[in-house]
Image 1 (spheres, rainbow, N blue to C red):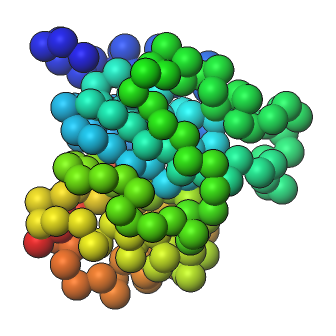
Image 2: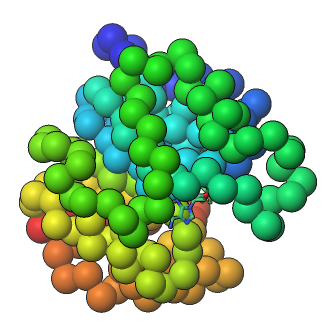
Length: 182
Ligand SMILES: C[S@@+](CC[C@H](N)C(=O)[O-])C[C@H]1O[C@@H](n2cnc3c(N)ncnc32)[C@H](O)[C@@H]1O
């Protein structure tokens, strides 16, 4: 991490070879938000957003069941987990993989001091609610970023978020909505 600023060109270079859905500008915002923080990501796929954040984060816990996705058939046939591990290998000392469904997580799994939660798992209402339940239980000041919040294909993301009372919106970048816990 050092004291280098988060440069867009650096983020772009790292994420470009990694298949995924998160736009470069969204990755750039996530990279800045992750700076110096303990980060939890729910929904990693092959690690596109993870490689955006990993160099700057103090630590990064990546939660994903790593099952092949039906709608991602064009995204290569090899194991998603193997691809993910290959992509985050340069930061393996600070990246921890939790290979399980997010709904089965216990919040204390993360330990204390989480500064950023990035939610990009399943986008149906019940899944988003479950992921938000974990995030919203963290202390005031924790940053919660949600992907596809503004994506009309996934209205349940904003619907579930709207029901959480202790999240204050602070930043929008394309389809990414960022909140801080109050
Ligand atoms: C949109 S992709 C994540 C994309 C990734 N953030 C990127 O930048 O490319 C959603 C991921 O969530 C995972 N996922 C979906 N439902 C899940 C669940 N219940 N628990 C854990 N992971 C889940 C899928 O396996 C998939 O890899």
